[in-house]
Length: 339
Image (cartoon, rainbow, N blue to C red; front, top):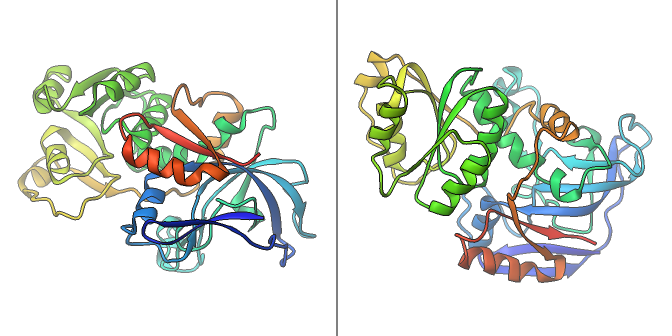
């Protein structure tokens, strides 16, 4: 079978390897149908992902069809359409005991710490696969994993009906957070530097959009919230400037969700944190969000609505990565198809 492997930065190859086999009774053999290209995949390709090890078969946004199941598998059967939950964990460390396996001491992420889904077939334990309505298009269900990232950020922010939420960044993850926040009944403001991305956010339910290059973000937020500020900030950019802005525009008792990261540290004053009793939380991957997202997909409450902008065949995977790298303003989400 064919597999896409990044040997080191900017060194990607398509190799012929043996098909994997089920070795444990709880395992499932899956034929890959779609793989989404994520920003973290691009960082692995560039050699700048600090968490990845090489060589690595990339791909963690994956949808496929079950072709074989182990003897102990009870929830899946041959022919099921599935999406991949890409994390595995120990189940016994402090984080796992607290219900936060996404930050397990021994966390392993499919496509980052271990070989991922950008290959024609793969094997995973039953619990890492979730069946989705087989009538749904592959292009729709492959977005399950990025939707869970948005769902996690909304959960970490404890977003409730009636809350006012600011999402900084209208990229794919920002849009996923928008969709999940709107499903919670929130009023959502979004910022970006791109007019096209702001327009797309508006088309997908954003109540207000703010062009961060041409408008005062703080001024507009105070105008839209009657000078109260937003209840929750989800920072999908997390530059020092955006993170610092979050403290200024968050209402008393508000929450700031740090979803992105930057190598440069922020300079954060302590006074607004104490004065407004703010909560600042991180958000990484997801925990217990797949069931919710799958239900929303099955009910067609989550739809891509233009989020996917390009598709490439497996044989054109290098072309795909080059296109994404050279055309960031034209790409929301690109897929690799396995047909």
